[in-house]
Image 1 (cartoon, rainbow, N blue to C red):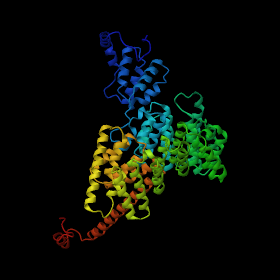
Image 2: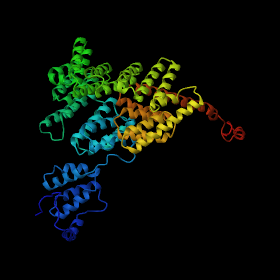
Image 3: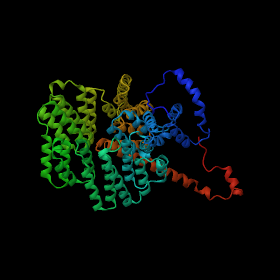
Image 4: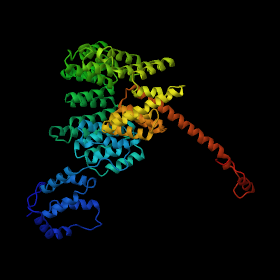
Length: 627
C-alpha cells in the first residue's frame, strides 16, 4: 500500500529522516532508472508512470527529475494531468503549474524579444495584442513563437487564441511555401492540442478551401458545445473567430449562401457585452457587412446607445447603406450621449475622440474634440488636452493650417500664453503648411520663430538641420542646439530608464540629424521593447535604419508601424519615401550587376587556356588594378 496521494505542501518531519529513508529506498529507485541511452520520450513516459509508484520516494524522485524538463515533457504531462490515477494526475498538474516557460529563444530577432517582454504578467487582451503583432512581423519571424504559444501555453484558452491569430494571417497569405510548412510541422506535428490540430488542418487543406471551411465548422461547433461548461478552455470569442475564418473562406470560393449561413451563426454567438460588440462590429466593418451592424443595433439597442463608438460605427454602416439621414441621426445621438461639463462626461468624449481617430474617422473625431471645448469651456483640463490632441491629429493628417489654428485657441487662454513650447509648436505647424505650399522663405521664417520661442522641440531642430543653403554659423548654431537637447534627453533616460518616451525622443532627434547612430538605434530598439504596441516608436526605428542606409529594414519596420497605425498620414508618407528609395537602390544594384556581366561576357568567349592567345592575354590584364 502506498502513502496518501501527493500534496505539494507535504514535508517530511526532519531532513535527517528524509536522508535516511532515501538511502534505504534509493537502490529501488535506481533499479527503475533504466539505461543511460534511454530515449527521452521513453524516459519521460517511465517517469510519469513512476509518479504513481507504490513507493513514496520513487514518486518524489520521478517528480524531481520531471521538473528539470519544460517543452520536452509538456505534452506528456498535460495528458497525464487527466490520468485516472489521482496521484499521477495531481503531480502532473503540479508540475505543469510550476513550469517556467522561457518564451524567448536564443537567436530570436530584437522585434520578437520586444514583444515577449513581460508577456506572462499581461492580461488576456494585451497578450492577444502581442500575438497579433508577432503574427504581423515581416519574414514570418514571429511564427515560431506563436507555435510555442500554441503548444506550450499553460492556458488552453490562450493556446487557442494564438492559433486563431496565426490562422488569420496564414489565410491572408494563401498556401504556405516549403519553409513555412517545415516550420509549422517541426513545431506542431507531435502536439494533440486542439489549437495545434487547427493549424495542421489548415496546412493540409489550405488549397481546398471548401473542405477546409467544412472541417472548421466541426471545430467551431465543438467549441460552442463546450461553452456552458468551459473553465478556461474556450470562450464565445474563440468560437466566433473560428466562424469568422469560415465566412472568409466561403466568401473567397465564392459560396455566398454558405458565407451568409456562417455570418448568421457568428451573429447568433454574440453575447452582447460592450467589449465583444466592439470587436465584432470592427470586423463587420472591415468586411463591409453593413446590414449586419444595423441588425446588431436592433438586437442590442441599449448597448449601442450607451457606447458612442458603437453609435458611430452604426453611422458608418448607414452611410454605406445610402442612408445619410440615419447616419446623421446616429452621429447627433453620439455627440449628445454625454452632455454637460462634468469631468466624467468630458473624459468620455475625449476617449471617444481617440477611438474615432484610431478608426480613421477624423471628421467625427474633430467634432468630439470640439464638443469637449463646447461643453466644458477652454479652461478645463480635458479641453486643453482635446485642443492639443486635435492639433497633433491634424498635423499627422498633413493639415497643418488647421493644426496651427487649434493651438491658436490654446494660446488665446490667458494662463497659457507664456508657455513657449506651445508657441514653438504652432510656428512649426505654420512652417510645415508653408512648405506644403512650396514657399521656402516663409518656411524658413516660421522655423526661425519656432527656434526663437523655444529651441527644444525635436521636430523643429530636425527641420532646421535639413534646411538647404544655410550659412556655416547657422549650421553650427543648430548643431550645438541638437547636441544640447540630445544630452538633456540622455539625462532624462538615465533618470527614468523604463520610460520609452526618452529613448524614442533621443533616437528620433539623432536618427534624423547627426550623432552616434548606433546609440540612436539602441535607444529606439529599447523604446520598442518597452512599448511594443506603439506604431510611433516603430516609425522612429524605421527612420534610424533609413539614416544608417539599411533601406530594407527601414521599409519592413515602417510597414510594421503602418500596420499598428494604418490611418497615420505621416507614417504612410514616410513608408512611400522609404519604399521609393529602396526601389532606386535595388534598381541601381541590378544595373551595376548587369554592367559587370556585360563587361565579363567576352571572357566567356575567350579561347581555351592552353592556346597561345590566352597566354598572351594573361600578360595584359583586362581591367586596371584596383588602387
